[in-house]
Amino acid sequence: MAKSNTDEIKALYKKLSLAPELRDEPPKGKYPKGRIKQVFNIFSAEMNSLMRVNIWFLLFLIPMFAVLFWYVNVAVSQAIVGFNFMGNIGIGYPGGSDDAVQGMIAVYDAYQKVLFLLLPAIVIMSIGVAGAFNCYKKYMWGEKVSVTKDFFRGVKKHWYKYLIVMIVNALIVLGTGSALIYFLKLQALGIATAGYWVMLISVCIAAFLLMYVNMTLLPMICALDLPLHKQLKNALIISLKFAPAGLILWVVCLIPFGLLFVASTFVSMMLYMMFIMFGFVLYGLAFTAFSQLAIDNVLTPLYQLSIAPTEPTKKKNKNKNKNKNSKINYNKGGKR
Image 1 (spheres, rainbow, N blue to C red):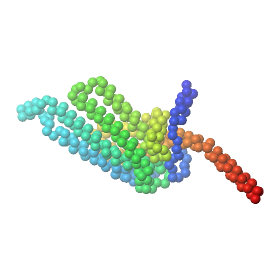
Image 2: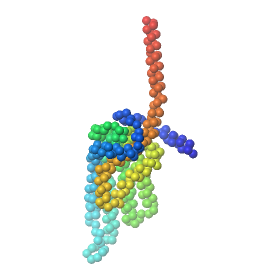
Image 3: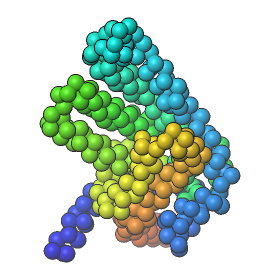
Image 4: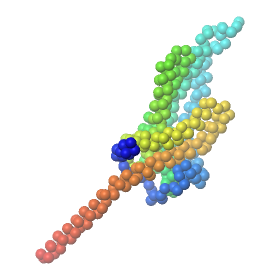
């Protein structure tokens, strides 16, 4: 059984696309204290420069902040204008008994508009994602980081790849959010059957697994010299083979977002502030560490094995041709 599992892993790894890492400096070896320790050590040692990376990143999140913290309240307020929620409770409060349900549906429609506005906001955010991950990889590799230069170098080289990936992520968010809103509407009307529960759970599981691939894909795009479709194939394979540890890390990363929906207003505001100040940096470093784990242990060793047999052969052929040319020149010289 163990042998078959090993054969399966080897067969899957044969489908990986191999390429050199996009390093500016020679590799410095693996971090001796482990990936988790490395993330927090980098975070504490490079706090000042990481905050500058975060500032550049946050500039490209301004449209998203505008949608989430301003337009949501505007859309909901406009949605409930004209509804009478005091009907049928006494003299002077006329109105139908279904006003409350209609009001809830109007609010859900307002949230649907918010989801559509998140699409262009996520597209703009992709520019910041390209720059930030280009910096995070250099921190993880122990290279010297010039924040502004490296940030916009990542934007220049990889913006189109991140744009495509973030558009797909935006569509996943739109599809999942729309399914949830549709279910809430049915629930408000009292017609949400077991089939709709199955639909919602299935959509949420699919979104969870698809977004999980981002932990490998986003850092890998700027770390390896490969086209996007090969990066995606590698990310899918690595995400599958590292699934136990990766899924646990992904769940841990999602817990703070879950707390935003259940915490009080004060706690939610504190969580938002922590996200803005430190959260994005820690998430970026954690994703980069997870992706680099696969690169160091799988992709780079396989790449080195793939090029190792060819280098001596080329050198041998080169020497052979050199000797052959020397012999020809020598013979020509003899004839003279």
